[in-house]
Image (cartoon, rainbow, N blue to C red):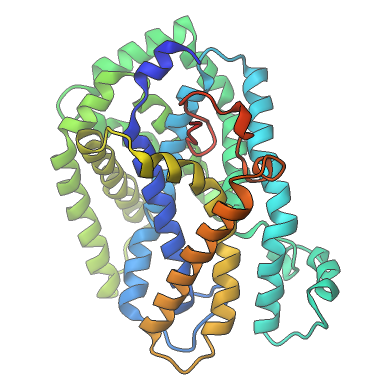
Length: 384
């Protein structure tokens, strides 16, 4: 690995990635208990949890896309475009195919049983997994693994731009961009393309999958880490960022809870500058306080990709059995969350981590090939 890239490594990105994915596990464990349709739904829902989960939803995945964009900057290094695409296919498409056919299918099986359909066994159900796609009332779906193929799509779609910014002419552009956005409050100009993409492109995108603003978030993450002074500006603006985020998000929540209808343009503005500023605040405070590594980070930073692939299936199975119980809603949530964490950790630690023939199916390098710390593009995975 290029020594310059190793020198630029920032551990706070690892911490943010680990935090975002652990929050995702917690988030999905709560989905049966909020007032939104999910794979398994509890009869009683929590209004408070529904509002809190709505807040989480608006920044948890955008944060991951920004961190993933930062990872692409480090992963490209001095690689050619072809070498980069080959690596992305290996690290993203193999886990995606395996995950859909092996990990996701049980989710659909338990969801259909929860709806009242009857199968003699999972083996009896499995051929029906290919009966149409989920968007047309069928069964075949990537479910939570949409993030993997969306990220692969963004890697390919953004590659010409990424390679340009790595070129001699691109560095001139980055220098001019650095000079512009490192002025006081200049970093918030980075959120203008996000607002424009929401306003002019998102209405024409496929629902929650290939939304154009996710690609913009990846590009923002790529640009942010390209220059140290940009990240220094993010850090120095961490307090203004949290203030801006608090004002905008509080207003949107006030409007939501008081049935005040906001125009789409106002919603897009709040999403771009309110939640965008919140992501800048995360980056700024993390850069200030979390630029260190330890044994916990090294373990979890490798583990989160398999955790992500595994966790929702475990959650759906647990919720299938827990939701019908005559228990308090919060006790059900605790059982689902704790059970998901325990089973996911156990499966990873004892059945995935030690075995080279399984590791690539979950996006991990074989143990004998792990020699240096470096960034990987798909979710900023660290190789230790």
